[in-house]
Length: 271
Image (cartoon, rainbow, N blue to C red; front, top):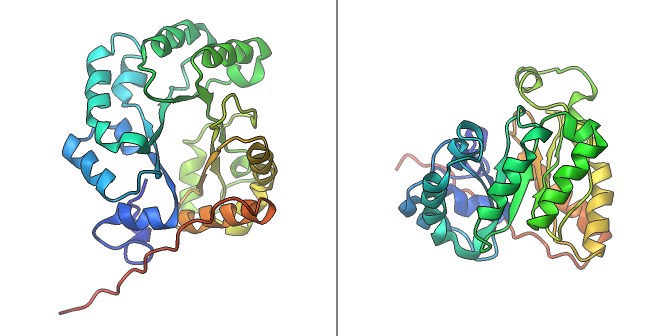
C-alpha cells in the first residue's frame, strides 16, 4: 500500500506516489494485487519509480487463494507471474494469504501448490485458522510443509490491537475484521516477514511493538534479513511509525543501513 488518502499532500504528492513512498520506506505490501492482477505496463511504472533493492511483498490474487483455494490455478498464476516480471529483483517475496477457513486438513493442497511454483521467487504464507496456532501438531505440519518449499510463515500480530476495546471508528471497524490469533515469532527462513497491527494511539502502537524490536534485533544478529510492516487501524501515520521502528532497531544494531531521506512534498499552488 502506497496510496492512502490521509497521506496525500502531507507525505505523498498527487502523482508518482510510489516514488515518494519509497523515500520513506524500503518495502511495501502489494495488497492491490489480491483484488486483480495489474497490467504489465502498470507494473513497469512501479519498477521505474523504485530502486532495484526496493522490496515488494506481493499478495497472490484472491482467485488463486480464496476462490479456487490453490487448485486448478495454472492460468491465473501464469498471468500474474507474467504481469509482475518487470519488477525483477524488487519482488522480494510472493505472499500467499489464505482464508480463515483454510484448515490443517487443507495442508496437503498447500504442499502440492508450493511444489508447482517456480523457484525463481520466494514465497511466504499467512494462515488465519485458529488450529494452526492452538494445535501443536497442526503447527508442525504447516512448518514442515513450508520448510520443504523454503517458504516463510508470516505472522500477523494483532495482540496489541485486541488488548483493550476500540476507541475510534477505525478501530471499531478493524475490531470486526482483523483476525484474533496468538502471537508467533518463529522465523523459518533467512527472510522473515512480520505484519504488526497497533492502535490509532501512536504511544500504544510503540508500546506494543517492543517485543518485535527484540526479535528483529536477534534476527539481524543471526544474519537474517527481516521485513517489518507496521499498521494501525487508520494507517494515517504508518510510514512515520515504520521509520520510528527502524530507528529503534538501528539504535541497537548501528550497522543497519539508514532509510533514505523522504522527498519533500511541494505545496500545491494555484498557478
